[in-house]
Image (cartoon, rainbow, N blue to C red; front, side):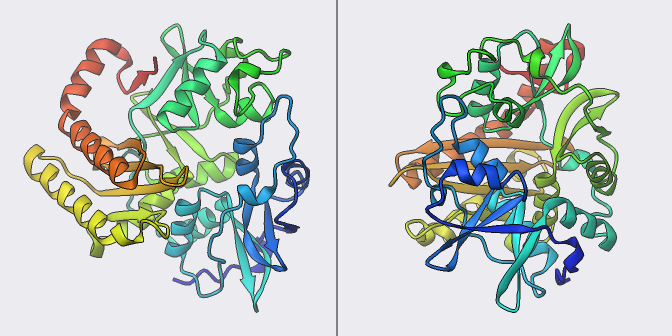
Length: 379
């Protein structure tokens, strides 16, 4: 189905030069959801609020760095782009909005909730269960832990939110966005936090308590409706009224894309660049082979594997994979290395180990957490 989006569903964009400072970009982003970056009059990339918040220090900030450093070059959506491809571009870029082009000109942007609404109306989410696409177990932190501990945990696990527990009961969530947007933490140097909002303050001081949730047995259309109605991008997933996972808009898009990659045996890889394209075929074959071995040896049902490649330095890479285990939820795995080969080898080993030890982890977690099964505390 083509993504011929009506103009009234498009959001406004602002056009800026690639040498615009991050400080200026941050101010403009207060009025529009996305900036279209141009270089010599040509399309260069996209910047949204999340990108600025992630990369710009909030304490003692100069904001003088140029915005081209964080611009993401993504394909422009047109009337001919399918909904599936649009979801793929959201997954690939990690952006909250994508540029929409008509007659050779960018006329606006498509935000994630708009795509979610269209998916609801076209029923592409029908028949898909929340628990099959949620990330489990959800990671939790004590309300008395420090904000710096929460930031450290989110960075080490490559996530953006944590459940908050108080006296062994669910109290809410803490998000990377809330901490950074409120200027509580210097995004690059936690030790240089704003003294008015010390990093040593308790997580309880920034906990969101009016949290939207959904039962693990509910269907994805229900999750999408709640996200749209509440204006949120994630839901806490409950099983027997206890938190067991988290589902995000990205999880939903990833599930739709993964379900339609049958011809590739549900292997979905993004982020290849000029130095790694040569490995694309072999990487996909190795992932397919791993799926087959794990299913055969450990009697698990793997729905799909997604892998995102991020180049962090000239030759260094970070890899982030997600393994869908159907009713048993989603597993996150990440690795890094001084070369793509090192990072990929480490990732394959971790994926094999974590799936192989799944039952063992479930049993040990249950013993450790007793009645609080379904989530795991970060250290």
